[in-house]
Length: 202
Length: 194
Image 1 (tube, each protein chain N blue to C red):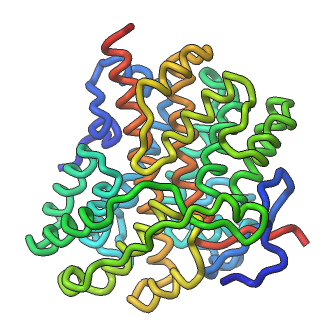
Image 2: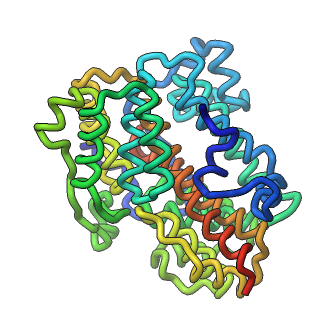
């Protein structure tokens, strides 16, 4: 059962609280943050990307953001999507091995190269890959790049997804899903901090 | 990776093109549902939006959120400073294309092009006045993974004169560019206008 407003759930916003009232002053933003969530996680037509794949990527992305509320929410979604226990355990294991700090990465060669901040290129461990399958494993590799070092993106990264069975339309859906979560988890982080300050006026 | 030559190698307020790495839906083949996802009919001219139209429902919801976060200025943060937050997030992530668009908007609406150019040239540590510094620091803290926006950034925004609604606008504008930067950086690349 999905909550009526996932951003409220992730940010801990109670009905009638000052932050709830504040969010309701921008109803179009509030409604479309939720509509975006539903389009990705309760799609009218999942097309080439199954609900289980969506939940698996989300559980990984929430985990590597080190956000307990999001980790629990998307972890529960993965279980509800029917993920076998070993798959859920493999995601948890990969999250633990993927922790990092972003954004890092390289700029196009030139004056900005002095700002290059090289960092880790993540790849799902072979043992987990066998459990997750090539499609989900390739999606997690790509998601790690998108979350931590998006300026390192290349056409070659898209070719790897295609080689693992992701069509162009599937890649658009995957990219929207990971990028939306980057928005949602940051909005939740910001609103949570704002809400805490409204509860304890200084 | 990409053919060199026309790829911008500095942050700029110049108009840039964006070249997709996957095939957009041809304009003449857009379905009614895909056109609905574009929201604005004029967006059918854009290869970026026609690529995203491959998944029309999320595009439609995203577009409506985008427009409200940036264009609905009936109350809250002025448009110029929402654009500043978007430009700062883009500068931090390294999205030269997004930074160009939103630096242009920020410069236009604020009439402070020199300060915007300092943000682009010097990076997110540029000193562009305390109110703008506070907004930039908040946007950069949200841009980080894991995000580290908290009481320190909030207090600085409040001291700079932002009320709760304006702070919520900074949070939404900066967070939205966590979304936009990743799509623009990973589904294609920036190109100088020929």
